Amino acid sequence: MAHPRVLKRANGTRQVQISWGKVGGKRKIEYVGSGRTDEEVELLLVEARERINAGQGALELGLSEERRAGEPLEEVGSQMQVLWDALDTAFRALGFDEAADDDVFRDLVLARIIEPTSKRAAIERVLPEIGVPHASHRTVARRLRLYSAEGFRDSLAAACARAARLGPASLVMFDVTNLWFETGTEDEFRIPGFSKERRVEPLIQIGLLTDGVCPRFG
Image (tube, rainbow, N blue to C red; front, side):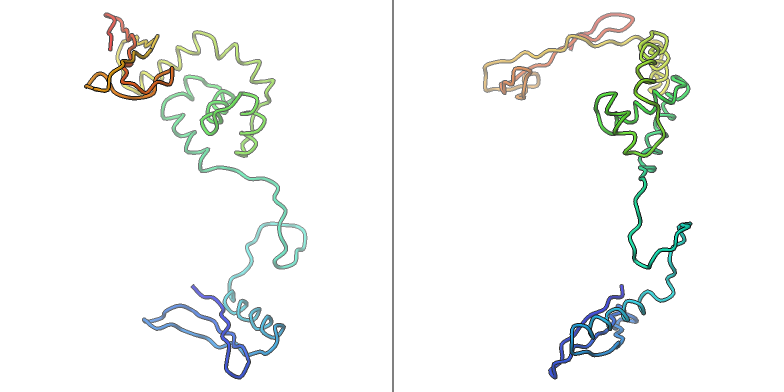
């Protein structure tokens, strides 16, 4: 990678060079000039940068106003397009786009994956930061009744079952809790860890898992 450099000489001058990196195993150095004062050296550095950037035209941004070279541009927006496209692709791969058939629901779900937060914050802060068009919080509030309807949930559950290649079944886990033991000896069932009560003694986590045939404990 090319870069300018300044070398001090015994006679008090400072020499400006361009180091072009190694060519054929040897470092290529281009002499630009020598100066004594800071102003002279700065002018030589400007010339060195112009030589390095020669042939590299300015990027055409389609701006109507005339701007000076190097003048900062006003930031009018940003977009996390790669992240949003990746999440949207996963959403569609799971079949949620057809199951929900609602872009407002998709936007709310993907926004809360990026940052788990309230519905209002997702709509009014997270989505604008991502840079995608979105509905208002009032629109989301009106659709909550639709999202909580049994048919809507069943459609999403069916999509999950298809994505997991799950056959006819009904699985529910509920009332998960911990049992803890005052012992320093652990085994395959009693493993040290934090319980809900913040105890560190060996504990067992238990729950009830049911399906369409019979309940299972574990």
